[in-house]
Amino acid sequence: MARPKCCRRVAGEPGCEIFKPVGVPVSAIDEVVLSMDEFEAIRLADFDGLYHDKAAEQMKVSRQTFGRIIQAARHKVSQVLVKGLALRIEGGEIKMVQKRTFKCLKCQHTWDVPFGTGRPTECQACKDATICRSEVQRGRRRLGGECQRKSGFSRS
Ligand SMILES: [Zn+2]
Image (cartoon, rainbow, N blue to C red; front, top):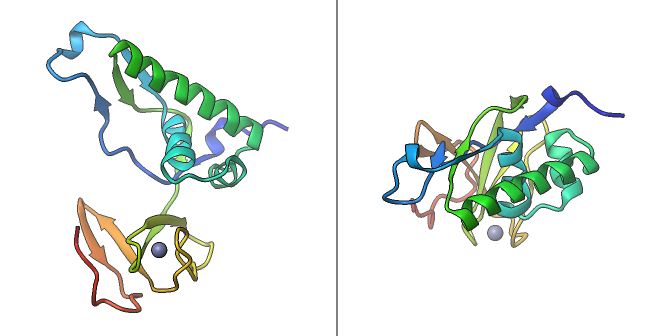
């Protein structure tokens, strides 16, 4: 059964809205538009390294749908890289979800957890239990009240 597109959940925002080759005016190059759900697919599968079924679960789409989204997204990114185009990230029928960010104090890995899924007990990367709430708000990183151990935390 196909779910409506509006149910795609997006938890991360791009670091930048538009990427373009240095020294070329936007008006002189073609632009590829990556929708927010396509961006989210790349973020989950390629940046966070999640398996497709896990990533699909987070976006509230089927694994097949996720496969189509990530395929389209990677094709667009490849066009940008190969042809030297501009990439704009916007739009898509999505719903932003509130999330919490956790940070591992041992390996410095950070990852997002959607609200309502419970507090993680160990680091996704190294399985260490010394993890800490770490929120990004208005461009600055703020420590939450859930820290188990603050010493050794570096504000990189
Ligand atoms: Zn870790």
